[in-house]
Image (tube, rainbow, N blue to C red; front, side):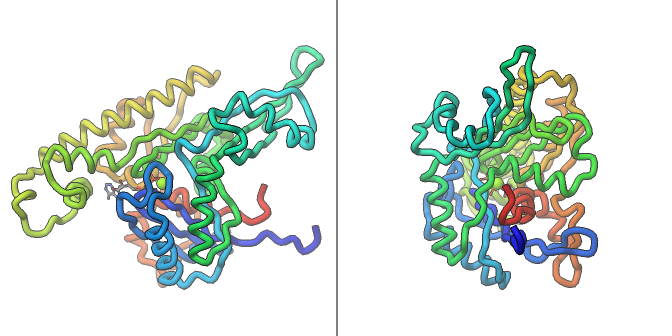
Length: 361
Ligand SMILES: Nc1ncnc2c1ncn2[C@@H]1O[C@H](COP(=O)(O)OP(=O)(O)OP(=O)(O)O)[C@@H](O)[C@H]1O
Ligand SMILES: [Mg+2]
């Protein structure tokens, strides 16, 4: 349509440990960073991708918007976890209109929820004429629980924003990766976004997603284990995990020696690596591709010292920590570059969201 210009959006990643805001603008050779900020959330505000305390979330979003003086009202958010199902299915050849009409019926057998409780989205991935006359096509089916989407969109509306796009974490990191890494379509690579409660896995074969999975593991496991084993508060455990300064020793922290923290981090890392391996075993069982070339790690928990090495060792594939701003211009007059490069891995989903335009399919 004439004058149907794509409109810009703010990317807002509402994670269980923090909300990440990214806005991009046109740069000299691509994109330039316009706004970026991370606002921490208390541990109980969001659990397993569900908003438990919407008041806290609304206030944090309002604060983010006002601190950054963001003008754009249009927002892209994403959802993940148990309330989201992504499946590739085979269906008889049909037109897009026919697919739209029949998908409610077709989806029923693939979705473990009542079909009236989910929002469905479909995308035709490819046609296969097949050996016989009856052709088939491969379709990507995405279902997300309506109540979860409703919870997310209502906090945005309450914060005075307009939710325009609801994406899926695993697709956001794929978008982000495609924009930032020129070799994104070479061979088989695995994107692993290790957050606080959820880890998103997306296996790309030649730049196309072949397998996605959300695993209920992440950085909070380290914190909880340190808290439990060393009998310290959650905040103290979190500080011990990231190696931060605990201040003057208190009765509880005095006895804590870094060696103990190190061994807890190692054992939780082993568990996380084993879970990622299990997902990749599942992928390998359903794919013809032989070899995974590389692991790209991101998410706040990719910064846990030693975790990347443990994952690399377990999977037996080299890894790299992703910089979601790799191809994005950042003006050092507007941003603290060294701070950004430290926290960048946690911005993966938010950058993927900020790359979306209203009017995208
Ligand atoms: N420097 C650091 N060292 C170790 N861990 C860190 C560091 N910085 C952040 N983390 C951990 O990263 C996690 C947060 O990562 P991220 O922001 O990607 O998660 P989230 O999006 O909030 O959560 P989720 O996606 O699981 O809902 C927390 O567990 C936090 O403790
Ligand atoms: Mg996250």
